[in-house]
Image (cartoon, rainbow, N blue to C red; front, side, top):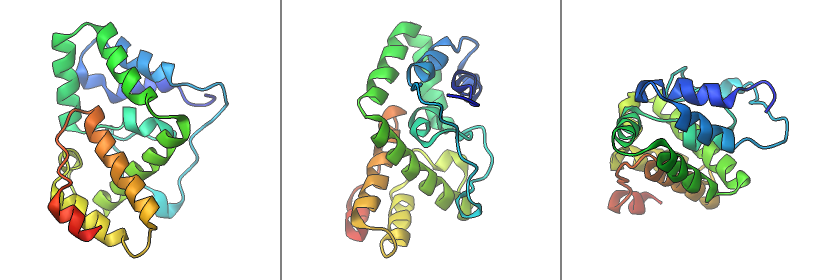
Length: 179
């Protein structure tokens, strides 16, 4: 990727996990494609608040490199219990279970959700794990403006992001009622 040092971004994003960030950098580097892609400057309507939890990256990298305090805590626990090569394999297999286009679509869902949270002044720690009421209000807001397919992709992306970060997904009865 020209213009973006994804390994450095991963190391910076996960810097509070511990001093040895070779695993994070290696997973991020394994996702690099041979095409020279750089993140676009977001449109004014697509901007999000600047945060170390969601650095400016290609949307396909959001699932792995966007996090919350809960996600960082889990990563810290992994580093204390498992060798780096196993953590690398875990993240690599989870992320590589999705093709590049799917990762990009899911990253767009995370971007839209983050924009929603920013517009409602939702603290970073409440982005994930996400409460059922937050997921449901996000869904209700977009129900009239986004297609069913788009909305479902956004919700699946949020769910997968929770899986990658080992946090509980609270999409249940209330969410089903607004979908």
